[in-house]
Image 1: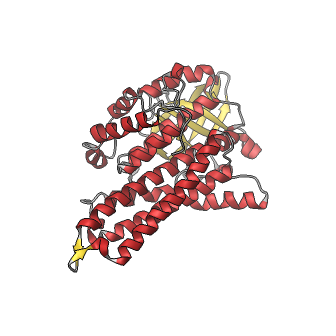
Image 2: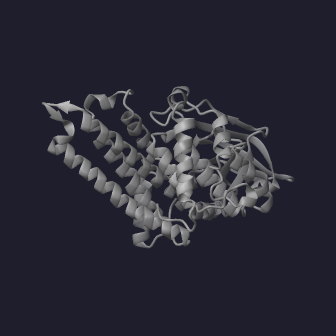
Image 3: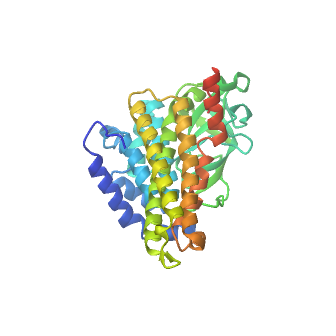
Length: 385
């Protein structure tokens, strides 16, 4: 992790590590079985100062460097809590920065202190049943009324969707204007017209709830508009680099955690009279994993430095997200292979690392979309999400 512009990194890292070991590790298997984490966990995270790390102190945060949030994501993933990492990324690394960067003073004062304390849980809703990165296919509509806005439509695959108190919703406000017709709205989930579908069952990250959300004649006040009408696409482009930094931090942590598990296993497991770690195939596989992690971290550090200077662009983020998420799947697959049949059992944590990794190439923009973004930058065309 690039050194932030203060000396709080060791303190926060120790706090994060101890919190996870004491408050998460003893319960995580039960949360995986239940398919959800208790709301009390968010309040505990808030009490530990881990939800508003880079939020100004006046809004309930610690005023630390944004890179410590990425460090938190990395440590959560390193300890094998992929579902918590994704939920935390949405709440603390995406929704809160959207409010901080785009929201009005009234927005920030209403929502951010409660989000930093864990009283309010956040989500962001972009994907729809028939529209992911293709904003032109978005069907959720927000139309003006005398008192504000009317929201109609649905969103799919929303992390924290079952528990969110606040959802940033992406909707079309001018269907004829293309990307310039997209706006963002702050939706209080207690409002009439908001509902949730049944929790979506997934192959991994079971502790993190994922939902379909519905908006049926949902009436919003004028102040629910986040930023300017029609500027939603621009805001997405502005904030996506940080989201993808978070995904990359998760990948690095998970790869480090999987490698540590594998090293312990191959030192102890014996085959044909010697430790599995003594076989050349094992040693070469581990060397390749270590090399890939270090190369990925080098680019991640470069992007962190560029983000801090306001210089990280959409192409940087696409390259980072593409390479680190694909690398995570490859390296953890290689690690699981060294466990043999034991790696395919839930008794060994490497199996959860494997299942939790798969979604990394899908959310926050699929690998195919990342390649399209990179290709467009090479050919002089405009960015895509």
